Length: 227
Image (cartoon, rainbow, N blue to C red; front, side):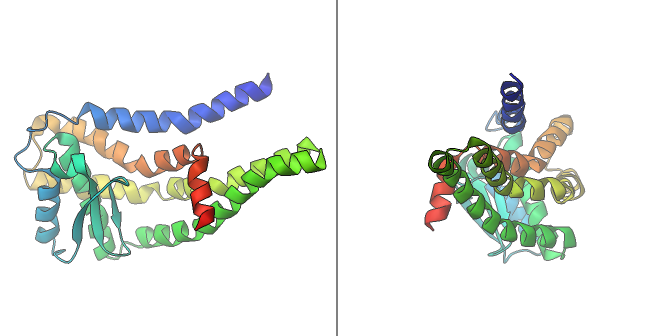
């Protein structure tokens, strides 16, 4: 019974943050004509205004993010073309990351290094997870296999730990960069400020929620190993 309860708590810890982020994003994803500029148009305006004309802007299917490796802000199709509160808020958040990168914001540089190093841990964790059931059958000893499985799960959870430890980077992008930029440039309707605050908080937790959710996606780790 204790294992069932622990399993339920673990599942809740993994899925609830994802559900909360998705709920907040969806709640303010309309109407699609609320703002004159789309998320992509606003992102380009802000990048140019802050001297970041060299930063590229692209549409992606892999989730909204800023990639410091090739200096590119990538937005989902809905946020790039949409004119909702969600679209402009998320666009401003990702521009906030671009500004962090351009100004040499040390915590962001540290996070990029840590995430790069965790990729090796993810691969090892994936291999351990797949080896654990085989080990249990061959050795006929379930307890060591359970330890092996937990070790793999912990290794795969390394990105979650990194994102939790570097949440200040996300909050800085949201509340020290994006929100002041939106308010100062009159890009945000006054009545939307409270909702924008919720959206920016959700944006800050996006990477954490995504990392937690990926723990349930074992097919992802199979693809990682094949690389």
